[in-house]
Structures are given as C-alpha cells and as structure tokens.
Image 1 (cartoon, one colour):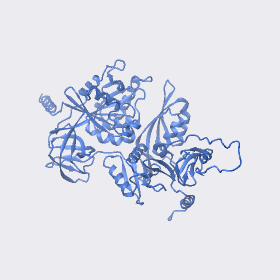
Image 2 (cartoon, one colour):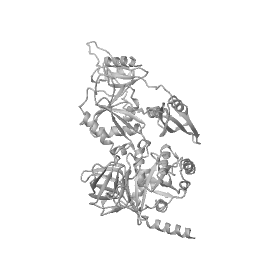
Image 3 (tube, rainbow, N blue to C red):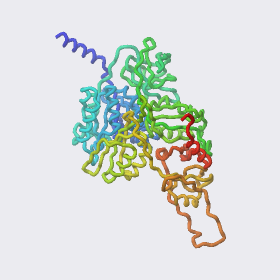
Image 4 (cartoon, helix red, strand yellow):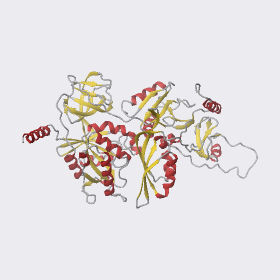
Length: 626
C-alpha cells in the first residue's frame, strides 16, 4: 500500500515538472517524402500568416540551393500555435549526405513525425533517421504521406514500417506508435487512409496527445548549442533547447568548450521562434528552443550553463565522413580572371570557417600548402559546399572524390552502404550487371504487380562514386536510388571502372565551329563555339577508351578554288553540358575540376603533353625502399 502511494506521489511531482504549453517535435523522413510540404501546411493551418498573405510553397527552404535542387539541406526551426500549446517544429534534411544536420538537432526534440511515402515505403534514409530517433529516446508518430498517389499502398508501407520498428527499436515501449495518414500537399490528414479530414486537425491532436511535454529539471541554467546563425545587426547567434533553469537578457553564462575550458560571456538578447520570425522575450525557461545573441566564438556542441555550477552536457556525436577530395588553388592558365577570392589564405580561411556550422565536414592541411583535404558524408555533401563557395565568389580546383579507406587491426577496411534502387523490370538486367561490376552484393529483390522492381544492395562507397549518372542512363531517367552508410567492412577487392577517353584541347584559343565539328566526329563535346579554352582542358568525351588531343580552335583554310559545297555551313550537335555533380562523377584520377563563379571546366592534372608523359614515367618508377 505504501509503495503504491509513493508511486502516485512521485507521478504527481513529475507531472508538475512538465511544460504542458510546449511540444518540441522534429520531422524526419527520406528525401522527397514530403517533410517541407507538410511544414507548409502546418504553418498555414495554424494561422501563422495573414489571410491575404501570399507565402507560396516550400516556405522553410529559404536557401537558393535548396529551392533549385528541391531538397532540404539545412535543419531549420519554426513554431506554431494550436490552442494554448506552442509546437516547436524542427525541419530536417532527407538526404543521407546531410545526416550530420539530423544528428545535431534531434536532441532539441521530445518526439518526431516519421514521414513515409505511401508508394515507396521506407527508404535508406528512413532507416537512418529512425535509428537516430530511437537512440535519443524520441517518441515516434508515423505519418503515411501521399496516400492519394496512383500506386500508393498505405497498408504495405505501414507493414514495412512495423518491420523496421522491430529491427531498430531498443525498447519495447518504442514499438507503440500512433499512425496518421495524410496528403500533405492538400493539407489533409486522418486516422484512416480512406477517410481523411478536410484539414490537419487529426495530426495536431495526435502531436499534443502523444508527444511528451518537456520536463523541467531542477538546477541552474543549462543548454546545449545545436546550431549557429549570424545576423548583420546582432552578430553571432547560438541556437538550442534549454534543458534546465532559465535565461534572460543581461545574464552571465559560462561556455564549456570541447577542450573542457570555461569562460564567461554575457547574453544580450533572448529570442523565441514565432512562425518564421524570431521574437525578443524577457525570459525563457526549460523546454524552450531559444536563440541567444552576444555570444562570440561559441561552437556547436558547446554547453552554456550557470557560471556558479558549470555542468557540461554530452557533446553531439556525429558519424565520421566516408568520402574525401582535394581542394586547391586554381592553377589553370585562366586563374584569377573570374573569382573574387583565389588565394591560398582565402581558400583556407573559408574551408575552416565552414567547420563551425558543418559538423559532418573535416578539413586537413596537406604537405602542399596550396591544397587541402576535405572529407564529407558523400558526393552531394561536398558538391553543395563547392556550389556554395562558388556562388560566394571563390575560385579553386577540386579532385575526384574517393572513399576513405582505413586499416583496422592490420586489415584494410572500406566504407559500405546499403543501396535501394527502384527500376522498371526491363532495366533490371543492365542495373544488376553494372552494380555487380562495382562489387555490389544483392541482399533482396522485390517485384510488384505493376512491372516495378526494388533491389537492396550492400555496396562499397567507392562503387557508388560516379554511378548515379550511369544509373540514370541505364534506366532512361525513370529509376530511383538512395543509399545510407552502414559502417566499415573488409576491402571487397579492386574493380575496373569503365569510362571512355577524354577529348582534350591541343592548344589555347577560342573554339570555332569547324574545329568542334572535327571533334564531334570522335565523340561528344562539352563546349560551344566562341568559348575560351587552354591546352589540356577537357572539351568532350570520345567513343572509346584512351584520351585524344583535338584542335577545337582550328578554322577552315580559305582558298581561291570555287566549290559547290563552300556555302554549306557547319552543323554541330548541341554541346552536352555537365552539372557540378555530373562533372565530379566524370573525373578520373589524373583530372581536376576548375570551379569559378562563372564556369566549371574539366581539365587534365598535367596540361601539356610533356608534363603528362613526365608524370607517367614518374609513376612507373619503383618507390625507394621497396
């Protein structure tokens, strides 16, 4: 009897230490499963905007790159009101390469919405984000989205989600998760896939009922910095969730760094999220997601705490990078023509500055002062950094991406990924053959009734470098693929990559139609007439292996002999323009990509024939000591 009373009293005390007016929820999913679209609908239906305010779509994707690529790259915060409850929403990226963004913000939430496409079901990133959510103990609400698609199968998708729960759950309590069906694009949701409400009210109610309210822990102020931002007026800003205590403008707090150092700083402003805005408040307490200004040199992962009782929180754990490439000062003949920042000092400062906010990135100096080794979570992770720097006015060159190989206990180990591809049945043979050549091992194959096939592979990360373009070609642009790192495995063996030789410019000058016509007899060109080229620059890809030097600046010789065909103009096939990601996939080991604000130029590492032959002889010489 006494034990029962004790439990009741303990429960009552616990309930009094909850912030019932707040819910902190993250939205996690695989890419293109509808996270940002759902956030749009939640913002609009919570009357965050005026009735006559035109806010468009993809409201949270404010970055130009995000809108162009159609994916979320950076985790962002917003908040909405539903009745007397403030729901703080954390929108996270869906692509595996930006998993570091997910890992650093999940600690701010008490629960999450796991979005799953009703047609595609769980994909590789679904597995990754769900595992991370279970590790930090979040309460899950499953949202089966896009139930209006023609090939949607909500029951099958939910069944696969339950299988994933059984595989990843660390506690029996985590298997209990409410399910909501939705069409985020139309702003509708319900507990039955065949009977959706006209709005998202069922989802709002489920969030308030099933996402735990924040617990108010006793003690002085304590907060883990999960993100940073910068404002031209207020300067650097630290973003995080207060785990205990409260903070007000003018308070002195201690910053506990990774090295264990402690220093005192003064808080200038305390801001809370209200819709898409940040609003200054007189005080904020445990459970609030806040933005603090006036804190210079505060890094993500630092703990802000009461100076009288400096108690650090566990730092954010981020998975290690798996792909690396070299960034270097532009050494082409066109260096300094187009970029505002092109020196070693400027490039080094920019790369190391990126480490403050990009936790999944590593930067190392190399023996060559003008080159830096940059490691990330995947090709897209590094490509976004390259594109961002390019738009900021930086000019540099990068090498081919390569997988990071380690030697563990004397054994050579390499990163391995779980790959999921959805293809039509007629493309199955070509895709499996290509993956087999890249040391992929099939785990599972599933046929559906509509002629589609889902393949699950375990494949080395190096086997996926350069595969995406090949995959789109093999599937005529209809295939879908996604992958997620699953750790390191023993070296799977060498494989030969099949890529035709490059067409390189034999001399510098301006390209002419006559010269390009000759080059197109050998293969496909990447440039149009009237462009500036230099010797060793890659101007196309030929039809067979082996590089060929071509004179794309050659003009037709004039003569005084009349010809019946003299007036026929040269007809060129339009140039095949490569995007940044395609250019990185194209690169061979002896090639570089020159990146400037205006152009992407493929080039040989050694530009002249003499330098190339000298490099080949040097590579063939035996290494001293062997």
